[in-house]
Image (cartoon, rainbow, N blue to C red; front, side, top):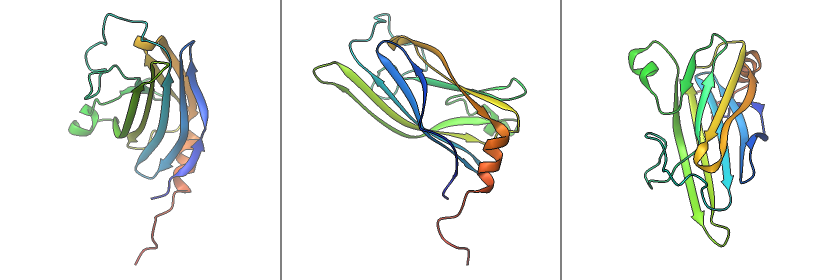
Length: 161
C-alpha cells in the first residue's frame, strides 16, 4: 500500500555531532510508517556503553524512539506488549540499515518505524534520544487528525479484483 503523506522531510533533532531526520511520515489504514535517518560524526562521547535494550545486532548503541499519544500513553520502540495483549499500540522497527567508520569516525543509521494501530486524533509527539551520541529528548510534533486524514489518502499498489 502507498501511504498518505503526513510530513517530511523534517529535522527531529540536532546536536553538535548528530542530526536525526524524519525522511517521511506516511499513514496507512492500519498504522503509521516513519522513515528515519540518523547521522553522527566523531567518536561517541559516552564511553560508559549503551543502556540495555538500545543496541542493535552489531552491539552498537542506536537512536531510540517513543511516540506520545494525545491521552498521554507512550508507545516505546520494540515494546510489542500492546499488540500481544490487544490493549494498545506498538512500535516496531520494520527496516534497518547502518554503517560506521571512515575518516570522520561517523555513524549512519536508517530505519523504518511502524506504529500500529493508527494513532487516535489529537497531538502526537515522536521523540528521539541517542544519548551515547549527545542527543536527548528531540521531539517532532505531529497532529493525530492530520495522520488520520492522510490514512484516508493511502492507496493499494494494485487495483482490487
